[in-house]
Length: 322
Image (cartoon, rainbow, N blue to C red; front, side):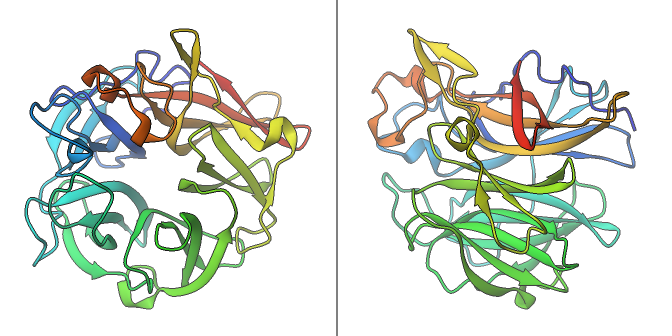
């Protein structure tokens, strides 16, 4: 396996079809030795769309890198992800891809049809794969809500798997479910709210520097929370108002915030400091606040995938933006 380079995504990744990659997740392919990038393929440059149609009818795009993330080859869209009975054209959002028990499990948001607004039901489903190419549908997860999106899954310090997600029917806060057999969609038991308060999305949980961390997208940067075991007791970081990725780019003198991110461990440096890579997206021609306030100029829909370094300093999770 070629290690992920610290300067991965030094040239931001752009989707060659619609120029709107979002919600990235990055995994190592142990068979080919390559890194694989999955993302929501928003239809940013599609003509004749109104409202938020361009965020619907989306496939999951895939790209591969054989040089540690410096250069990326577009591989098309992932096939076989639409569950039986889904209204077509389907809308697929924000996959999380996790290695569990010798196979890959994808946790994917699915909506039926294309809408001009943020209505309709949304569910999180599971699929499995041996090679990251062919996927088998396992079923939908019952989370007792009509609209759940943005799955993130991790094995926690208490030895159990947890699924965190945005519940748009309950204040757009992060909720969780727990399972001892995460391959089985029916095994997930909802636990309730995890991160209350200000609306947010895109949770991601990871271990770094001896602690468990969660980041969530507040549309003004990524909010940082810490837990002793990821099973609960999440406390917001106080450093810099608990926010990172508040201005990795600028447009017209205004900061552009980093959106919906993944975190990939990079290993330990010579001084013993653990590092990780934060892989995220931005809208390079738009600040990235409430999507309903976007300028009608189609250019503001464009997005690209970037990366930054993460480490723990003096007990705080800090970000070094490229």
